[in-house]
Image 1 (spheres, rainbow, N blue to C red):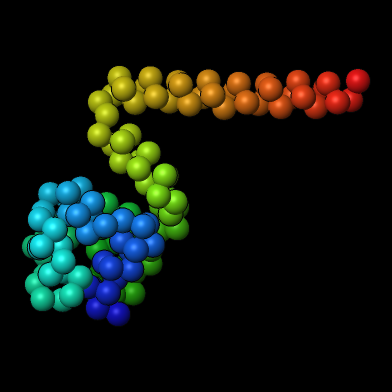
Image 2 (spheres, one colour; image 1 turned 90 degrees about the horizontal axis):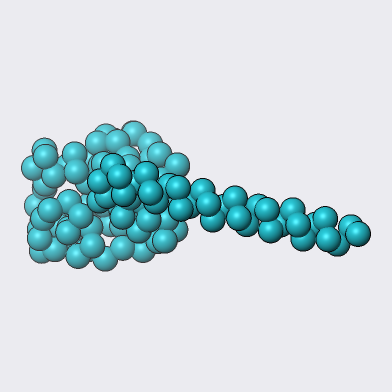
Length: 120
């Protein structure tokens, strides 16, 4: 499988547009489009950004035997959350984690109350 095919596959698996990927790695949509159709090859720095963005090895992107990392979010919402988190400063991250933990704990307590209520 060529590098362009791999990039296209990674993008489509995550339900992303070429514009979204290009914006995240700091290139034009046109440049990214050329990568997917194998008309041009990205410079080393862009390859690193793409590998980081898709959470895969450089070897995987260039068509080698490297494997994708399965822990990468595959749902579009998960990907958006991860990108938002990456764009936050340290304090925003801390506050966001606190809010999420509060939501999860609230749901857990609600579930426990519901089970206890149904048993009585």
